[in-house]
Length: 331
Image (cartoon, rainbow, N blue to C red):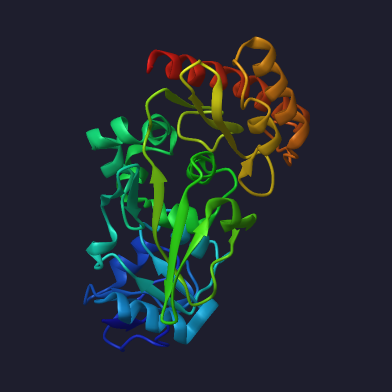
């Protein structure tokens, strides 16, 4: 189905109102109303409800950057209403239900379809068992109404540096699959984000799914953030994972941060500083200090750059301590 929202003038038998709704209602005899294009919040666009994946990819290949995919719409629609985004074509992929859901891809990994809603992940018992880091972070993402519509693929493709999911996918060393009419490719999370609201996706590509490792024995994870109010974007957020060997030494650690720079941050030096060591307070303090020195947050009216750096260090220390304790209990 295709609808053109740039039709110029309504029929004469349909009354157009612009300012005073109640005066218009009183003066109307027919009671039929419509908006002129200038009355719409977004700029004019063509709407395509894709019936097949092939159709969606073909339209994207035809229009490139002038076309956007509509999944949950929780980020795209507001930016369109403010006319910060003005796509000429909107491709609705909600009919493509095969893009939603979680499936096991290997004994130690799962794949989450791009159209999977946060709410479904939040209510799925398997999420807490296999993806505890995501399970812990989900309640921090906006509000239930938004989580019921928002999708993991839309969030990752939007690439907001203040969002939780990109930092989590970095902390889990996830992989993302993109597809176009030319074929498909896998992209490491560390290569996917290249700037604020910018990814390596080509103009004709769609993000199809993300592959994440399931929690292993002797491993722990933790997500912490501080925001002004529940559901607000984080002033700073930290996602970390810790894996221990049989002797209790750290065999792997990864630390991801949101709203700590122009893109989601993977704190490589801080993560590597823990490997091969028994994690105690000195090791945690060292990693937290490395995080503080590695990030470059922008500051805002809610928190200065200096406060964000301080907060990142505090949250890193707390998250690492919790993740390490969880890994020890999981032995």
